[in-house]
Length: 155
Image (cartoon, rainbow, N blue to C red; front, side):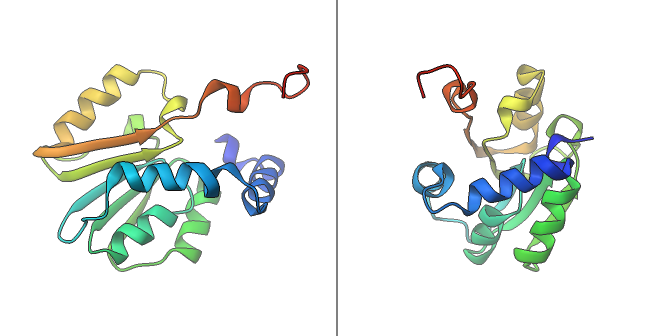
């Protein structure tokens, strides 16, 4: 089972994201949009580890055709409920298990998900093949300090 499908873990994750001072809303989202820019009209985008699809909805609203992948059933259920758009296709896979045709995407994005991958090199080779010749990969990973034990006295 994916850890995000564990009911207590998912509930705690949702509670953290609802906090007014949550890290994602104040730091990650801003950095992510600066990294990927804002020109999406007519682009094919792949989101690896899409979570509940907020980035996908925004990219689709800006004109992208989005394929959004996540291994969590709970995350995808929320995405399909809250971030619906005719230009988004949600799929349940780990990013390592995805298979796409060569040169399919203009942009591959991943926000706070690639640090879960066991074979990063193999994933990058796959992404390279999925990208069109002038395509781009943009990703953010979690800094280890963000997930360090909180009872170590340095928080």
